[in-house]
Length: 249
Image (cartoon, rainbow, N blue to C red; front, side, top):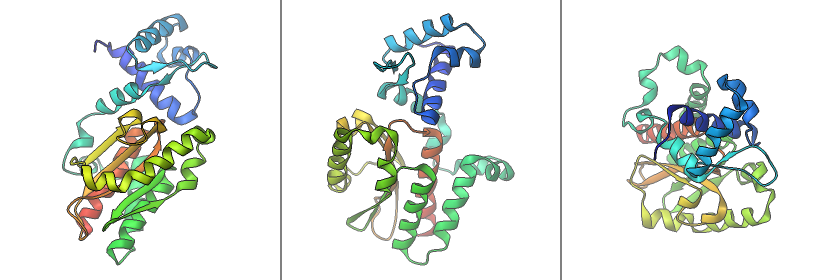
């Protein structure tokens, strides 16, 4: 896929702006950010749309990322999210605590460290992920799937459509047996939109981390939310939750 550096930056900005506002991103907004004309931005957006990375909703002049656009964004976040060691160890401690991801990691650690049992530690990590991301949190505990935050998930603007709610419900009904059968093998697994093996039309992203626990060598913790995500933050939090649980359990 041929894409210039500026087109890549524009796509990243659309992903991040849309995650923040839930509103399609227009050329005027981007022109101000990049210091170029709206016509220049529209030409770049046309190229991104031709590549299938962004789309134009019928009711808006702005653009939103497609599943392919989100996948391109996630794949280009950098190697730090896929290393075996904890990426935070390579950052100055003060900066980690002060930034948004660092505060979330600290909240996770506080919630989990206060629990004395394995199951309550896992549940505590899930509940913290719900609060930090606004998504549905999930984990496998033995042969059971623990879910938390369903109301938080369905309060997001994407789920005013009953069809989408039903598609998510179908995905959740089949998630535990799919996890048991498929056993995703990566430390961090991201399934975006139609990449989901079940509930392909639910327009959600499943971000899960595999970890070892007393229950299983393939336990999972993660979140389920709309494809409109702050992927860098959510991926970092889910990955850290898995690493942390594996270390303390």
